[in-house]
Image 1 (cartoon, rainbow, N blue to C red):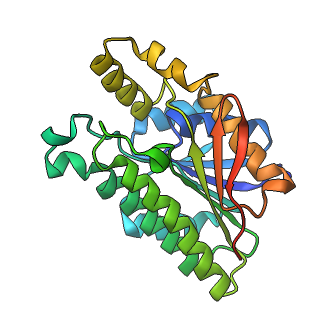
Image 2 (image 1 turned 30 degrees about the horizontal axis):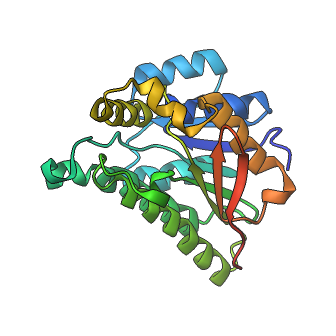
Image 3 (image 1 turned 180 degrees about the vertical axis):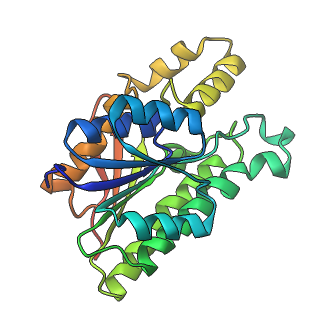
Length: 252
C-alpha cells in the first residue's frame, strides 16, 4: 500500500519514536496530523515537517472521539505514552507502578474504542505501540511491561470486534525489541539498568545489537504499512538487526 496522500494520525508524534515515525511518513508522502500535549514541541514539528497538529491529552476520551471524527484517518498510530517511573520492585509505590496503566493503557482503550465505534472506514489500519518489555518483562519499570502486554492484547481484542461487526479495520501491535536512546522511556530505562550494573547507558543498549534510532524505527513501521506481506499480521517485532519480524500472524 502506498502512503502517498494517505491521511495519518500519530499520537505522541512530537518527540522520540513518534517523531521518527512522523518523519518517515512525511518522507513517503503521507498527510500527517500529530496529536500531543506540548505546544512548543508541536509547533517545532509543524514548522520543520509541515504537518498538522492538535494539542490534546491522549487520555481524554472525548478528545479521542472528536479528533478521529474530524480527521477520519486512513491510518492511526497510537504511540503516546508516559515514561515509567524507574526503581527496584520492592521500593515502588502503587502510584509509581501504575503510571503506564493510567496513561498508555487508558489512552489505548479510548482511542481503540473510538476507532471501532465511529467507526473508521473499511480498510483503515490502526497501529498500537507496545514494547519488548511485553515479552520478557522489565523489572526496573514497575507496571510498564504488563501495560505494554495489555496493549498487545487490546489490539487483538479490537480485531475481534472488527471482524464481528464486519468493519474491515485492521489493528496491529508494533513491538520494538530493544531499548532506544533518544526517547524518554529508552533513556530512563537504559540509565536505570546501566546504573545498577555500573556501566554506561550506551554500553547497556549495545547488548541489544545494532541500534535502531527513532527515524530507523519509523522506516520499519512504514515498511509494515507498505509491504503487502505485513498487511494481515497482528504483532510485529522491530529491531536494528532483523528489521521487521512477524510475531503473530492473522487469526481471523
